[in-house]
Amino acid sequence: MSGTSSGLTPPADAVAPVRHPDAPAPGEPLGAHYGQCFGCGGEQPHGLRLEARAGDGVSVTAEFTVRPAHQGAPGLAHGGVLATALDETLGSLNWLLRTIAVTGRLETDFVRPVPVGTVLYLDAEVTAVAGRKIYSRATGRIGGPEGPVAVRAEALFIEVKVDHFTEHGRPQEIRAAMDDPDQLRRVRAFEVNP
Ligand SMILES: CCCCCCCCCC(=O)SCCNC(=O)CCNC(=O)[C@H](O)C(C)(C)COP(=O)(O)OP(=O)(O)OC[C@H]1O[C@@H](n2cnc3c(N)ncnc32)[C@H](O)[C@@H]1OP(=O)(O)O
Image 1 (cartoon, rainbow, N blue to C red):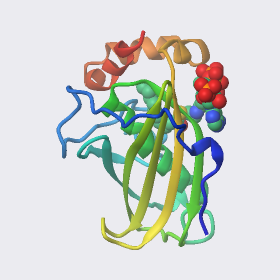
Image 2: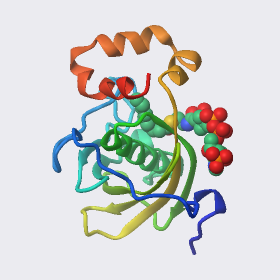
Image 3: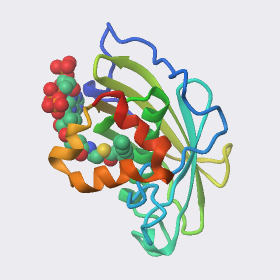
């Protein structure tokens, strides 16, 4: 059983998403937006290290290998970890819009258990945009892009200015990330809406 709450239904004046002309080409890896990110960063020993690639339109694909550190029940992935994988995949869509946005709402269906050792194949797309509100959905499949569906999500991301991170996070790390040549493609997002 699955349903969508009203906060996830685009309003009547919502429009189709527009892929930014400078978005990475389909198939291009997006890389980590921040090395310490629990979802995609390479500097987090127990993080998901999710690897996302640009797709067509405003869509992405991503892969994540479930490791023992990600267990809830013995031998099975924790639901919150799976929600994180969905959230991270959905968050990477914003790079194709060149918009800085954070998750406002994330609604997840857990369809089947995901064993440790599974490679979870995720795909996500933006479905509509209404002002600062970005509507999207994602699916995670077991073992391959055509594998059985394990998780699904719908989300609402809200566009923010870079001040969101400097006011609420650690401004010195934002500045350090912006100076890191390895982060250059990612932090260009901060230039969109300073
Ligand atoms: C470089 C960037 C890196 C991004 C990485 C992504 C990785 C993964 C993504 C994440 O995990 S992000 C971290 C988790 N999310 C957060 O920490 C966000 C915490 N929440 C907030 O900071 C604020 O609530 C938020 C910025 C989302 C909204 O506050 P605002 O004051 O800017 O907006 P406002 O409350 O006025 O809401 C704007 C619109 O969105 C709607 N809205 C906001 N939150 C909502 C919600 N939760 N459900 C439904 N609608 C919501 C709200 O009703 C309103 O609709 P209308 O324009 O039609 O009036």
